[in-house]
Length: 213
Image 1 (cartoon, rainbow, N blue to C red):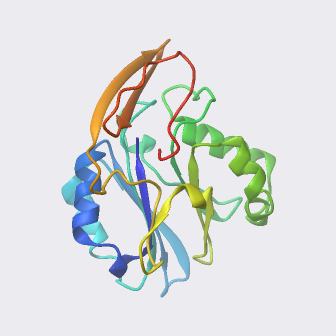
Image 2 (image 1 turned 60 degrees about the horizontal axis):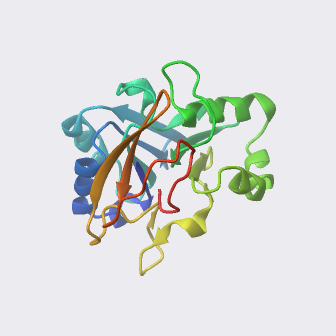
């Protein structure tokens, strides 16, 4: 699937970003807090070169959340890259995983969920207050929200991995040292690409996913 990496830009290693982009090549994005302008900025692109140019222009001490996409639903195009912003909720949003909902048209399940949540809620505090309930709803997935003050809220944080210094969080270990293989399944009209660690899982026609996605 995809991967999210969040921390200070200076603490995220160059080889981790490049490895993530190689293994999840279907689009790249970042949300980050501009300490000078006191706003959250976002950037999305399908170009590795353009993304890396933008990435290294972000001040090293900035809080960032990086997303590299492995398309599961929705075509490969910039509007389907993460993150998305909500002026209403004053936040930006990323997702790693697959949700058991139908995407709206040629969008993603991620954006479909986010826009529905946006309609039903009014302020960012609703994300914080409902964090545990959201986690139960999306079991197997991880969400990362960045508030307008630069603070980060991770839903299902314990399903991801912190580095030894607790400065960088990874939504899964697909850029780790484990042997990584790729299997493609078709379930109905939905096309899924599953990453698997040294094993094969038969498709059941249901939305059943490993915890690390």
